[in-house]
Length: 259
Image 1 (spheres, rainbow, N blue to C red):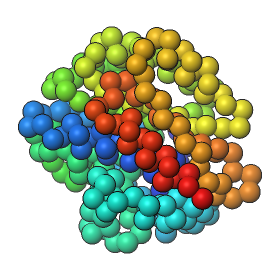
Image 2: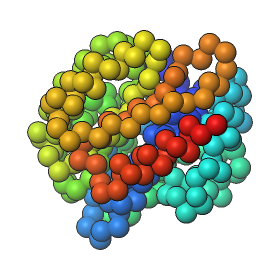
Image 3: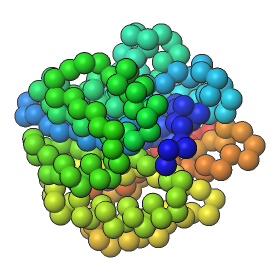
Image 4: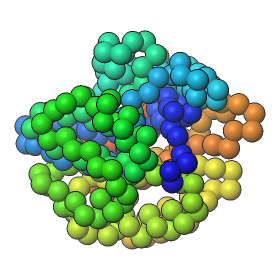
């Protein structure tokens, strides 16, 4: 949806959950010298500031990264990416998932990023560091996913992180993830979703568990940033989770949910 602007939500507790899992998975894949592909269907602007008017208006970053970052060890790959972003752009910098992926992958790896919103796509192009193998697409991300899998190199990871502003997204993703897995059976597929009071994600996860035995699901409750905030939690469904990701997911959840 072209109305969604992640600048209001960047650095919130759900971002920490999503980005810490993503960074863990990418760091593991990058240990091997073989090249990999990274695809992202809804890239946003790639880079944010938690002192922006949008972030200050919602207070979500204050309840998220500002409150929770110190609970993660300094050598965690997510914290390493945040530190690199701050070193380059100042203490209020917060890297989105495209920036984290660029930081954790190597020059020989391939990155394909889709963003349909014209202003967000322009910001993405400005934010991403120039490097070989990086392509930014102004197109529907799910169409890109279907068109580009299986990628070359075949080793790799795809992050699917739509706005979820349309209820049909849940049924659409329940059908799409198994299709992508059939086309790219070695790929790590990571689907982030919000947990709302009505738990509208639950039928999607039940369908995915049936279609994809071995699916990893990580869900965490997130602190309420303000009165009336609809987000209750953050979820990530992972096909072909890398070794150790499930154990790390439990540690990430404990850090976010503790008191």
